[in-house]
Length: 86
Image 1 (cartoon, rainbow, N blue to C red):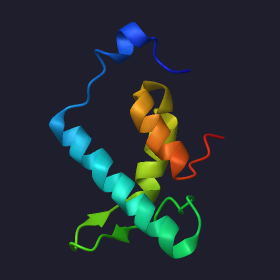
Image 2 (cartoon, rainbow, N blue to C red; image 1 turned 90 degrees about the horizontal axis):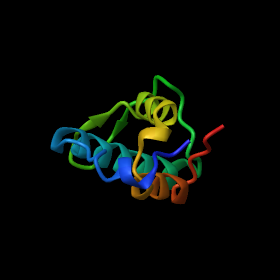
Image 3 (cartoon, one colour; image 1 turned 90 degrees about the vertical axis):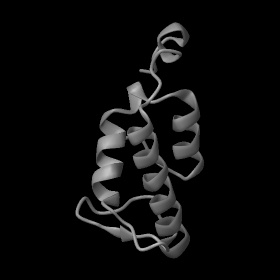
């Protein structure tokens, strides 16, 4: 269940968390472009073009578990990439 708007305004992620989320999104977009799927095994590690490694499977698992705490903008990005909340 999403946070109420008055609480969502206070749920701003830290800069470190924001960077991690952006790397996760970049990894997911790259993975989906290559495989056609937004579902990765929990142990999957995606290597970005800059050489950074992202534990994509863990990112997806954690993001789904915490989806109620995500901002509307972050949920929208994930839905657009095809993330299924089930």
